[in-house]
Image (cartoon, rainbow, N blue to C red; front, top):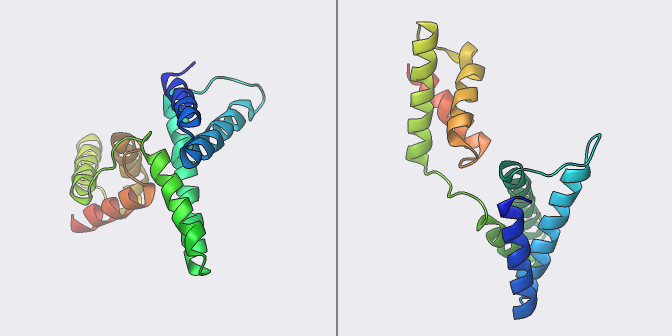
Length: 157
């Protein structure tokens, strides 16, 4: 069993003992999503820590979108609950990169592609640059933020 999944289960047990309803329901939901991901596809398999982080990232994003929808509908109490659940899940994700770090990462990816191809990449090579930038970000930055930084870096050249 992956160490992240073990950590989630241990924290769920601690939350149950502490009678922390928010953490308990959030972790149960996350473990259910992980379980669903494990049995999805042709055969059941154990997810790696990186795959579990991807599931948790998706769940965190879903909570943020729900909070936005609830806030837009004037349901502030539910929006606050969704945000709180997102914060609980964020504890299990790597620290997010700042804007400057994402920009630097994009510039490095552009330079790497330039070194490989022998010419300065343009918008046509954005896919190649994105591949390198996303690999370097390794889940520490949202894809949209990375794409925006890459576009900015490509247009600056």
